[in-house]
Length: 31
Image 1 (cartoon, rainbow, N blue to C red):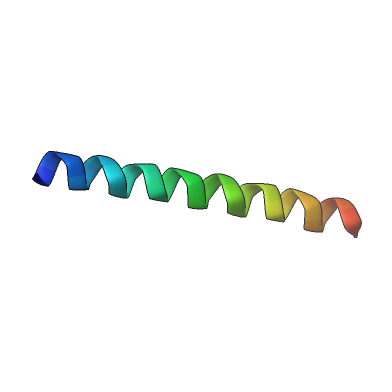
Image 2: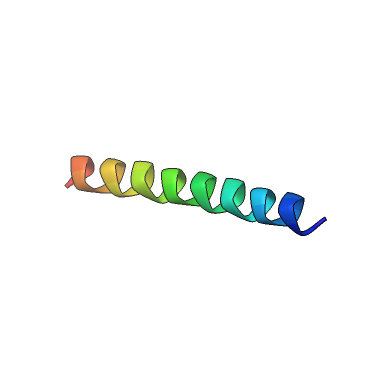
């Protein structure tokens, strides 16, 4: 149970990190 929760949290953090990275790239490219 705890291992699956850890995997889900890591998965969500990775997706959020990738999304923020792509957003920052788009913002810096637009300016």
